[in-house]
Image (tube, rainbow, N blue to C red):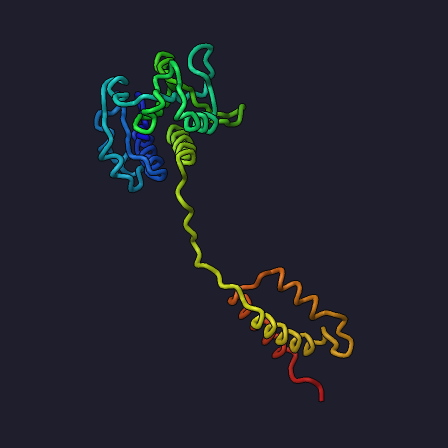
Length: 257
């Protein structure tokens, strides 16, 4: 499903760059600006800096004079507005609307301009208004839904790029999110023999420091065995615990003769 982000009358160059960055992190690259304040906004230094490497999105971005031009090829339009309106499309949360939109992709959506057999080949556009004034009523009225991000009722204003990031994330989640890449190498669990060897080492060390009386062990070692089993120790952790046991025994010194 083609996805387009449309910024209408954007006044801050930095927001354009930040919007490009937000889009790229979610795998989107179709950005259209409608009559921005700066005609050369895509080449301004602040835009490029705030894009933080999403230069390909800026390169592909287009600037048009009217919203009609920006909507070319788009069949489902989503407005973004914090202020409720007494007329217009239904106001819904992004997640609620996206789930419904994709669930009904094979069902008729009478009057919505979205034919079920063409959903996969259709375009979905997300419209964002000016930082100063938001979206105009007439632009909102053209949309099929008005997306409202559930924020603190006492302080619900979001920066343009922050709002776009939330919408882009929710849409990516609905379409199928990217797999999370682990930042750490896979751990290797210790086997039973390694745990047994470590426990024997600890038994010697605990005896050396006087914590364990071999004549009256009181099930200390079986209890430690159960504790370490629940911990699901890795091989690296076994090495650490044996190192501790070694130092305990060394600190205790030779046994009294």
